[in-house]
Amino acid sequence: MKLFNREKTTQTDKNIVERARDLQEDLEARRGRIGKGKYGRVLKMARKPTNEEFVKTSKITFLGMLLVGGLGFAIFLFKDQVAPWILDLLGYAPPV
Image 1 (cartoon, helix red, strand yellow):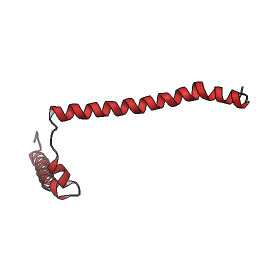
Image 2: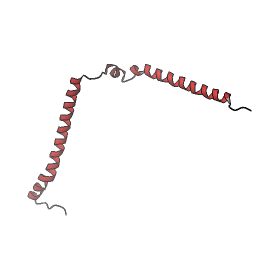
Image 3: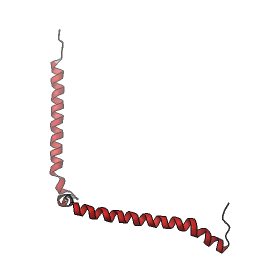
Image 4: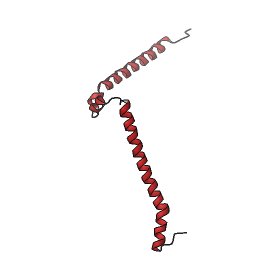
């Protein structure tokens, strides 16, 4: 009487090992192709920014967001406050 089927276990282990080896070879091949595609030159030139560069970029981004937000708020105020006043001067009645 057999308690364990050794042949099936070793066959499964072989398949797992073979699959792991294939996956490893695929990953190594992909790593080797990183610098050869459309964006390879950009990836090769990319580097981590210095603290000074990061602070400058953050300040410029914040100012841009502040400018866009301020413009949106100005448009909102114009729509909410100025537009009804102009429509009253022109004689248009607001819809009820």
